[in-house]
Amino acid sequence: MLREEFINAKRIVIKLGTNVLRNADGEVAISRIYSFIEDMSKLVKQGKEVILVTSGAVGLGKKRLNLDSTAEDGVKQACAAIGQSKLMSFYESGFGIYDIPIAQILLTEDDFSLRYRYLSLRTTLNKILEFGVVPIINQNDTVSTIAMNPLMAGMKVNFADNDKLSALVASELDADLLILLSDINGLYTENPKTNPNAELIREVECVTDEIMALGTDASEGGRGGMRTKLEAAKLVTRFGGKVLIANGKIPYVINKIFEAEEIGTMFLPTSENLPDKKRWIGYATNIIGGLVVNEGAKKAILEQCSSLLPIGILNVVNDFNRGEVVSIMDENNVEFARGMVNYNSQECRKIVGSHSNNIEIILGYKNYDAVITRDNITGLL
Image (cartoon, rainbow, N blue to C red):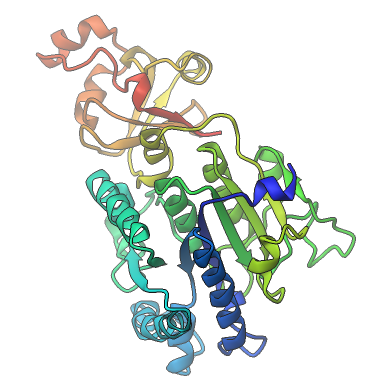
C-alpha cells in the first residue's frame, strides 16, 4: 500500500509509550512531549480527530518520590496517582498554546468488559470528539484491582498495558489509524538489540503466527513490548483499521508520518471487517470461565461459523453466569474462540455431551438449542 493511501485517515489514535516520554537519564523529555503536541495540534487544525493514549504517570510519580522500585503493594498505584496530574499538566499547557481543549479519561478493565459501560464510554468519546476536544486516555492504575484480587487469578484480562488499551479504544471508536510510538523503529525480522543484521519490515499484510513469533518483551521501564504491539495490530486490522509502529524518538515523527515519509512498519487492514459486538466478545471482555470442546465442534465453529451445541462440549472450566463471555478451547486446552453463553456453568455441566433435544428433559426448561449461538462467537486468529 502506498504511504499516501495509508495515512489517509480522519480519526487517529496515537499511543505514546513510557520510553518516548523520557530521556536517557529517566527525566521527562519535555521538548519531545511538546513536539508531539505541536504535531497533533497540526492534525486537529487540519480537521482530523485525534485521540491520545499516553503512558508515563507511574514513571513520573516514581521520579517525584525518588523511588527505585514500585514492587511493593500499593506503590505503583500511589505513583500513578501522583504522576497523573503532572502528566496532564504538560498536555494542558501544550495544547493550550494552540487553543485546543483536552479531556482526561482514566480507564479500567471493567470499562470495556461490562458492555453497558463499554457502550456508554463510546458515546461519551464520540461526543468529546464532536466538540473538537482531544481525549487523553490512560490506564487507571490507581483504582484497578485485577492484579491484586486473588479471586481473579487465572483471568484473561482485556488489557494490561497501553498498547492493548489503545487498540481497544481504536476498535471502540472505529478509528481509521492507530499509531504506536515507542523506542524502536518498527518490526524487525529478528530482535535488533541482539542481532545487528536484523532487517526492518516495512509492511505486514496479516498478523500471522509467524509475525507474532517476532514479538519481544518490554524494554526497561515499560509494560508492553513488541508482542503487545502485534496483539494490538491484530485486533485493529481485523475490524478494518490500519496500524503503524514507529520510533517516537525521531524528531517531529508524527509530522513526518503524515508527510508520507517511509517511517516504521505498516500493518494493513484485513477484509474481515469484524462487527462491533464480535470485537467486544473477542477482545474487550475479561475471561475467567471456559468450555472445552471436541474436534468436531472446533471444526464446525471455525470452518462453518456454527453455533456451539452441548453435544460438542467435553468439559466446563470455572464458574460463570448466563450472558458472560467465556473461552472456547480445544481438547489440548488451547483457546481458539470466545463466546457469550446462553446457560450458566452449573447448567452447562448438566448438559455436557447431550443432544439439544434433551436439554429440557435434563434442566426442566430450555432457553436455546445452543450453548452459544453463532452470532455470539468470535474466532481468535
